[in-house]
Length: 496
Image 1 (cartoon, one colour):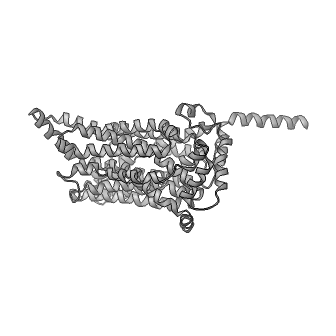
Image 2: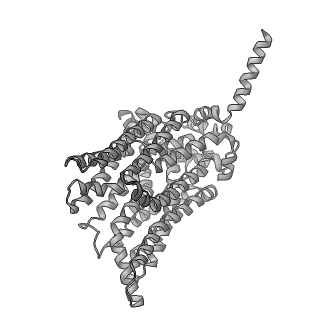
Image 3: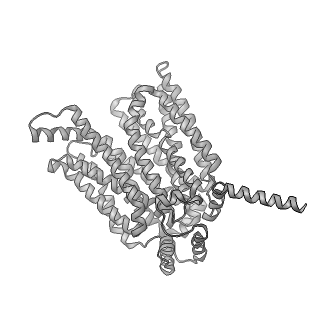
């Protein structure tokens, strides 16, 4: 911890930008996830009232459910579209201008959501949710890459894990404003839906005062002078020749510094196993069971005998636990390493899922067993926040080059948005069929993913891109390496 604080004191100029990026990009993602459930009752009633005013008849429950589910799912569709376009937009316009565009779209989305009740239009909710999905899909890809490219090597782990801290803080913020004591009321729910638009206004006002990222200026724009100025703006007045040499070494690793598209990335043999690891780590995050835990939490708390009016505050406790664990990860990641923290957390999460399956199966036997289930849920959330919830992005950023990073994040974010949509649609049916035994599916996914990552994921802590790439090349060019080894052996035998 002392080492991180010392490095932060040396590079203190970067802190304001980290905060601005987190508030404008990380907070809205978590906020929109948690605020959806808080507003569902009010939005459904608003749809019903709007329908009566327009057509003079009551709307059927099936129609209300369809319109509400459309409003929920269209967010994922917008997010997928924003993610797919991010690679092209980043390559053409750079991160700074794309972030400004994202802010403008986010402000527009907030206006649609905030004014829907005044306008008496539930269609504005659909448009606002779609635009919010688009801006978050685009801005998150920019955000995590921005962090990776402005971070000094000795602070990479700490700075990259600030993104999950802001995301989980956004979830907690959404849970707080969703309480009936704050904005969770009939009169204020439009403000609750649109409140995260203020974070976009803040980011839009401050981002123009910061330059593009140093790697973009040096490798894409070929402007060393502006690159050095950007480094001094972010990190202070020091000699950065070693950092410049490290960036230029990408030219020796990659065939080109031109931004790759997804098709070029898939065809590039030097990135084959990096891509396999990226896909595995993304699917593991989606299939780890975190959404199932949040789904089951309310029923477990009810079974434990907690009053219904206290359950939202228990959910608030889960959100606080996830925030604290993400903050803990920023301290541990440079000490423990990425791979150790990731695999260790997955292992503990697997144990929690196994025990939770047992306690949920036996919760009718003894009155104290439901409390054990509640404790296991909190522990699972803690281990998720310390490990995959915070470490995944850092690992992906560190093992990909500047030219491949946009395409990699297009793939990751697309998988996440598609997974969010599919799980949201399919999971209720899985629960109805398997009940608490659905956790065994997630346990299996964690086990398989953990074995794969243990074998093929290198430790990225403190390593340059060149060192990480050399470790992956043992798998990317295995046939060539085997052939070279055979030729050497044959020469030795001939000489003997």
